[in-house]
Amino acid sequence: MSAIIMSGTQVAQQADAEFQQRIQHLKQRQITPGLAVVLIGDDPASAIYVRNKQRRAQKLGINYQLHHLAASVTQAELLTLIQQLNQDPDVDGVMVQMPVPPQIDATTVMNTIDPDKDVDGFSVVNVGRLWSGESGNFPGTPRGIMRLLAAYQIHLAGQQAVVIGRSNIVGKPMASLLLRANATVTVAHSKTRNLAAIARQADILIVAIGQPEMITAQYVKPGATVIDVGMNHNAQGKLVGDVQFADVQEIAGFITPVPGGVGPMTITGLLDQVITLAEQRAQRDDH
Ligand SMILES: Nc1nc(=O)c2c([nH]1)NC[C@@H]1CN(c3ccc(C(=O)N[C@@H](CCC(=O)O)C(=O)O)cc3)C=[N+]21
Image 1: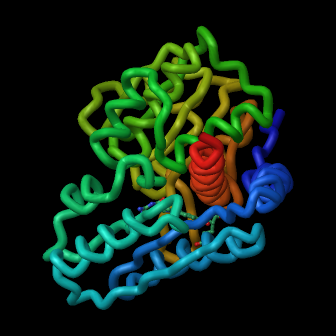
Image 2: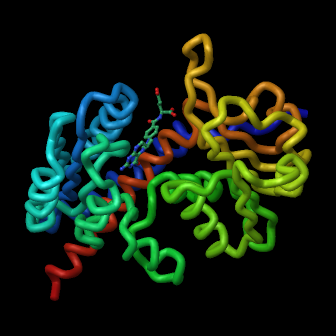
């Protein structure tokens, strides 16, 4: 038996059709969703992600601004730009592409973005909102994964979910959203003992560890849903995930490919968040 492949590419396309309608409604009310992306330096991976975001955003008619700064930019210059974007009424969402160069303190940057424009949901205010069950801006990757799970009608309430990885941008917010959906959530990481045995308990296994093809069939319960957040280049320069796809797809019930799985859904999560912020602006304009 082999797994059903969860196509992020396809689900992202369906989401874009929904987004188009929401944007059309906004434009009837003279509002265009605005997204400002700040890219620092010339990291080639960041350039690819930013280009993908730009292509999708512009196709939907989102007002997309790219602020490409030199790798030598000072923290003060960056904070000044963020404050300008915070004040700009046409900008609904602001994000600074990670990673940032060493002279920049990422935490200060994330907490300088107005929490209600922080589309990435990386600021402490939005992290607090996420874990306390309030509404707010939440990170694109876990949001996109929740949409992908819903599209394939993966049942979450009462199910065992295991998240491998505890980063602030994927593992922790993923655990929180799964918990909010009433899953029973375990967060495992590089120091976890008996990782394979814990992973094998998962009905839903989310892998975000940054280790190329580490997760083999022995980590997976037959029939489980396996979500691969990894993006690594192997020795041959090929893009691979954290999951050994060929092996695991023999045993899993559902599995995401890399590329074409979580990557496009990350952008979907981000665009959904920007459009939601523009809808909130439209509501404020009504009052
Ligand atoms: N402030 C901030 N917010 C982010 O959301 C953020 C970030 N920084 N830094 C880096 C990560 C990574 N990320 C991806 C976006 C798109 C793809 C994507 O489009 N992937 C495609 C193609 C990948 C390729 O061809 O290399 C796919 O998986 O099919 C992947 C990864 C956003 N991130």
